Image (cartoon, rainbow, N blue to C red; front, side):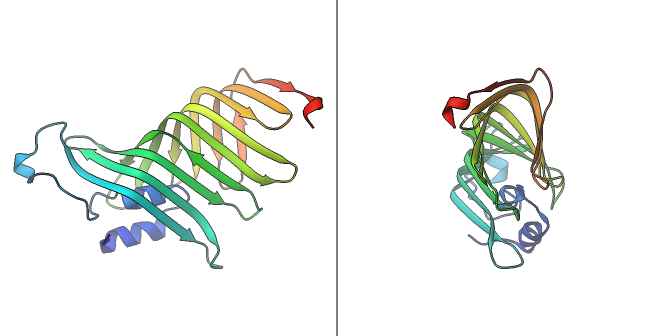
Length: 195
């Protein structure tokens, strides 16, 4: 796939989740089904399949990996639709965050920046590499703010590890610091027999 100069610049500016945004950049080389004058409202006018993006840090180590089965745009929409996005992020502290869902939408703010990415349907986020623990978070809706490297949901969140399960209505995640804030009605269950 050939990327425009703007798309390459977008890749260098975009943080954690913006690899998605760079690939679905409006100006990238996407397949157009009909000429612009022939497109009907709600018809798919752009589509890409089997996307893999790897982003390396300044030391040459893999920082982020994004896999998306498909991306499409419908004429007249203000967003791109994502099919099975999966994002892996390696943090400097050794933790690996893996985030995937069945679908999502990416909203572009201007030519180089994306305002947000809304993930929907069976979202799972795993936190791996934390000593003695592997965490998994599930929810139905999650909004990622790529420039701020944060994510937010008001939906019910389930957070589980080998011996602890927690639920909360709402969550804020800071990908830079690795901190998850559970917002309200937090309930915790601890089972020492599973250690």
